[in-house]
Image (cartoon, rainbow, N blue to C red; front, side):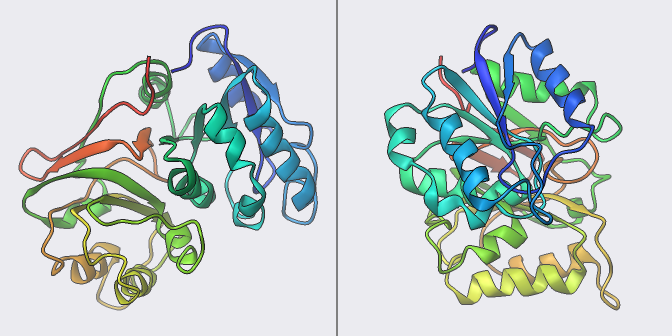
Length: 299
């Protein structure tokens, strides 16, 4: 786990950050961390934060510098999958460290688990928006990276995904992330083995039929055949498709898998985003409405 005085590095494997980066750095510094910014974070190459070579150089530098104890993604968007194959996974194995990101960073987080069994933290990025992630969410991030307390998320009935439920309890490794990136990972070295896992997914700006399409492809590829359960985060800015909304479409696609499903978790692109470890042991209990995850860091 991170401790006050530790050096951490901000990198931008996807889109470039904007002026909100300063607020995120301020929050990390309030934890007592010494924050450094990658050499190319402010670069621009089309819609990306610099060329593939430069973004990858920043990522590898963050994972190979022995003084860096945590790596934080500046922003998501798109671009991580263009460079993930070039990460020095041997360095990760030699000296693992905390990694925090979400959304487009799903491809990297899944790959870190698949290659090195590195537990990562699916939470807010440094391009911070206070109106979306306030004091509760700041504390959720701090506890996830700086304590060994388990993470407990409770179903929020106000979340659109709360309408998706299949009763039961299940225990397994919590794996997944952004649904679009999980679908894009089929046939690559990124998508982890989901057998016995609790699959977590969320997304933003997708129509109901898009959730249907992505889950259908995962089903047809056999990736959901032996999962233990499903935990569903936020359906941010989802649009209806005819008479179905996102929750209706997802219930239709996962309701017959024969595993417990718990929706309504504040994980993802919506307001009140909480931080949760990926790769850690987890239990969903639909009766209690809870997802309980072991700490993603060790003392």
